[in-house]
Image (cartoon, rainbow, N blue to C red; front, side, top):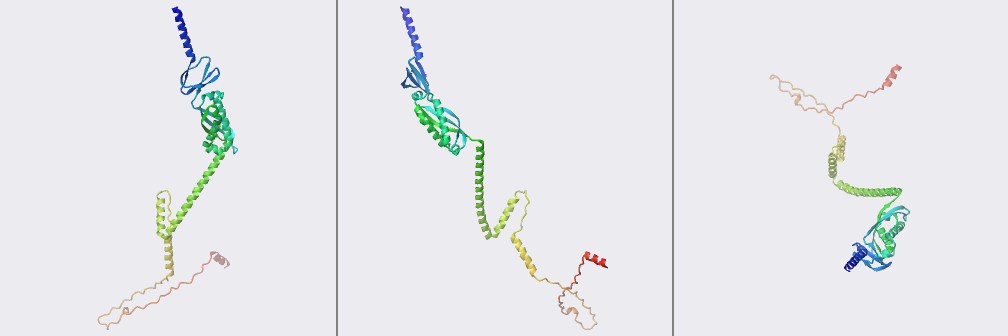
Length: 320
């Protein structure tokens, strides 16, 4: 009798252990458990930790609640301004209602991926090329709304959508490069012209100030000479000041206006005769008389001798 009781107890314990092992389930922290009893959804969603189900009757399905990062394959499309582009994107989403994600859609991951590709093609056709390249934030928001609208019914929430890359044809890249280069050159010319205008205004003001003070021009000339001579690798040509040239011109005109003075020869002095003691009274020497003022004698130049051409002399000799 005792042996039968022990055998029955061991059997019950073994059956209990097998039942517990078959009914025990562990749900992780980032998961939620959805229970189907005889194919019918139970309203209670099992939280993280240890839980029990009825073996053979209940079926537990775990749903991941983490944010899923799903890359969207590159989609080719034609923009509104007729440019063929290829756009890549990435979608961040998570499950907010595990029961609806399991019941309403067969595979919510595949459904979100297909919806993201379709929405990406649609957003490409509605946008222009400039918007795809420079206004991506607005396009990301529009793409997120397009994907999130049907995904809410599936118990999925789109957290974020980002356009990663926009691939352009080589011809379009060259055209855009030429356009950017032309725009840069235009802005450079405008800046250069503005700088020249400002410099011309300042130079006009400087010239006005220098015209009032002539010495300022000389000081500016000396400053330029000092700046050029500091390099020691060029030949410096120093021009004459205009005032100095004017002074020399006036001096030359004054010399030409004065009459030329003709110098007359000065007569040599005549020696006075020596008188003896026995001679007659002193006779006035010619030196005592006042010197005669001689009139300036104009120099008579000989008449010019005609210069004969050697060719004419030779012809005359031949005639003789």
